[in-house]
Image (cartoon, rainbow, N blue to C red; front, side, top):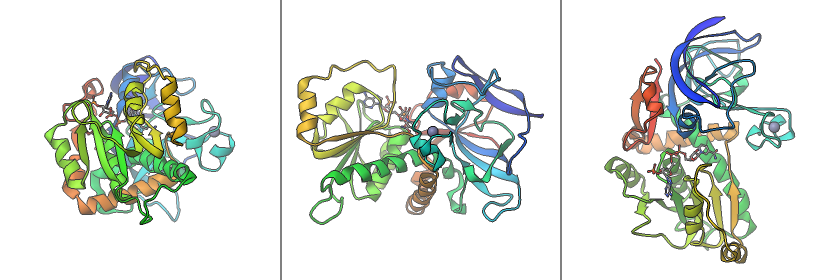
Length: 361
Ligand code: NAP
Ligand code: ZN
């Protein structure tokens, strides 16, 4: 048994404690690791609040170690050609089950869902907010760029965006989506929400040539507007200024009323990516006009969840590019660094938060 400190909850009931736990060393593992930085997102907060009924503890255990947005250091590793002691790595969150998609490394597209696959810190598998982690090399992605520093902790949330653009690339091929110059330059992308995932979507959209606007139902804080400005992203408070003629709509709010308000502004052959989830959001009465609108314009609405190992690799490449061009703005995405003992950050979102991280060591 390894006694260690960890941040735990009891899924799906909730609660949070920084406490000592005992975990058995697995029979087989390639690497022994420890956390450097771990991000916190709405999922962690939902778990602590007991609001996510789909979460569960690992089999036979009465607690779940939290944390899935991890940047880890390799403390020990068996002989191999990829990872060495001292390297920084990002661990995959979702672990494969037995279905056909899981067997080809695409557990993000698991054909069965629970309990076929598991997600570290969320469903049936301990997360990374603990002193000692054992894992296999196949589930680790190396951080090659030493200049990334703490921003490498954004790999996990960004990998979701990379997968969503893979979905966009597939579904947008049903007609000619590009302009007559064969680029996406000038095509309009609108992102509902202005949280951490929205920021990462906006930068990825700019890279592809989109004219990108992030929207929310209130004005935004100075710190957020400054980062958007640096990347060439626009912002609109849609209660005052409603964007029109949208080619790609991405929702990070999970709010049906807002999604349909914007969906009715999507152009012919437009694409809508549903990404945000909020089981508690009030319903919206879809009417015949809404359906007509979608059908008559060949609009594609696609859900996108999680991502595959390739998207972690792509995320690291994008982070390196962005970090080279806008190093200060990239650091400013991390708005607060907490200590592991500061468990109150799971209850309260600091004002102007983009990404709060726990600095483990
Ligand atoms: P977040 O920081 O809470 O972002 C949500 C954003 O949506 C916030 O900026 C929020 O604004 C905004 N929002 C809420 N209701 C809105 C409305 N009616 N109109 C406009 N904006 C609205 O969370 P995140 O970490 O960026 O994640 C975004 C969403 O993606 C969450 O729902 C999360 O659960 C989900 N997610 C999905 C995946 C996936 O694989 N599909 C992966 C990770 C996360 P205010 O806070 O300012 O009110
Ligand atoms: Zn599966």
